Length: 132
Image (cartoon, rainbow, N blue to C red; front, side, top):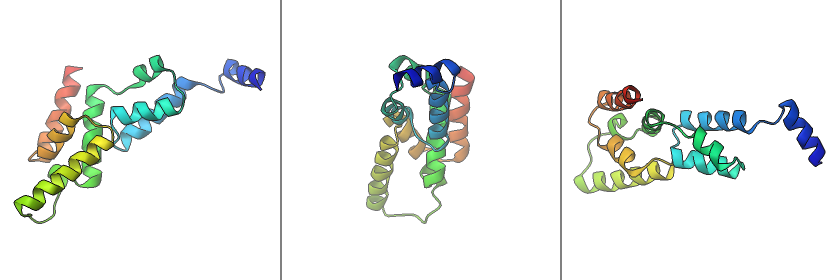
């Protein structure tokens, strides 16, 4: 069995880098954060140096947080009627927890949820792109 796997690797049929890139890209496009991507690649038995190399840059992290917010209607994407302050606080805490569970860091999640407009989020993502 090991000989077969070694031959497949030599022929390029098995390539952790290509697999890892595809996996990371797919998770980012669905709105998952860097921590969750790292967990997924670790579960797929991708070596640590390769996981670090495949990790998203700051712009990709921010864009992924915005994708999740858009999908789940968080922050400025929420079009529901106004809530009481108590309801709004509870909902914000639930959304913050959902973003952290999706692998986003606390500061990014908080920034997305506190953004007043979609344009503010777009500028936030553009800042990171310009910095890279």
